[in-house]
Amino acid sequence: MKTKGIFYHAGCAVCVAAEHGILPALDADRIDIEVVHLGKDKARIAEAESKGVKSVPALVVGEEVFHINFGAALAALK
Amino acid sequence: MKTKGIFYHAGCAVCVAAEHGILPALDADRIDIEVVHLGKDKARIAEAESKGVKSVPALVVGEEVFHINFGAALAALK
Image (cartoon, rainbow over all chains, first blue to last red):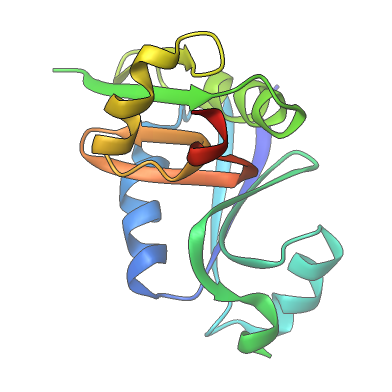
């Protein structure tokens, strides 16, 4: 069974570098990635916050949150 | 051709969570991952630093450095 993954970002340079650097390296047979642009889809900021996301870019794999470098604080996107 | 990846860590709880959460999700057909424990292999701290690593855990994919959450500053490992 594939693991659900969500990549939260806000389109910043750090976000784009993480998206282009890490997502293509993921195994699509094992992980299903959804990419969410929180700058455009503000309705999902509360969802990201509820999962423990504090900054973007962040990769959520199952229940684990992996903040990747630092692009922007989640609070700054509200 | 596979991309070279290096996962630098120091065995801390944040490092172990990142190792167990992200490395299994990577596509072994596309990326060759080397895991380096900088607490045990101090000779490679300078190498990590030269690649731009500032804290661990960090995943270096090609020339890009992705710090994952924050386990410890590289300086603290010296």
